[in-house]
Image (cartoon, rainbow, N blue to C red; front, top):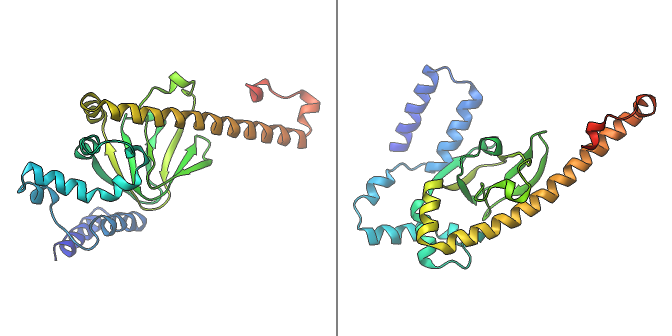
Length: 230
């Protein structure tokens, strides 16, 4: 009944604001996924429990996250518990931009369910990340010569992630140093993969530009612009 009441309120609000039909569909899709026809206040429920029980509930509720996220492998129960206590759930509908590297907030996102695309600034999808992966920058890209690698992370289907904000990551790193070491190790491997991936993408784009110019016979007539090789 509470869920139906919420939908009715949302419908009335969207009619009042003259929302377009496509936006209405996206909002209802979000509600259906997040609440699954049920509505309750998690904070009110947890607020009645002791700290010990809260942690037990947290560990149980996040059991799928613990099992799927590769970054948690090898960490102690205490390490994982510290991260889980700071996470915030977020849900994205298909087409949502979750992260834009040009406006990086310093947050880390752990994917519980769903597939995301890594999209270049030219709009090309170069790879997928999915259940168990994490994205966001822990280390400075310039440390790896990757400061020019710009991309966005786009939800390709319904995506459920758990976000760790910078101050919470710093807290976890201070109190549980193994967390920082593990995430940084994975981050270094990610940058090496991205550098190779985006370099191949640039080479492909340059080759395409050259072929297009050759077909137009412009290279023989006026020479190829040097910027294509830079």
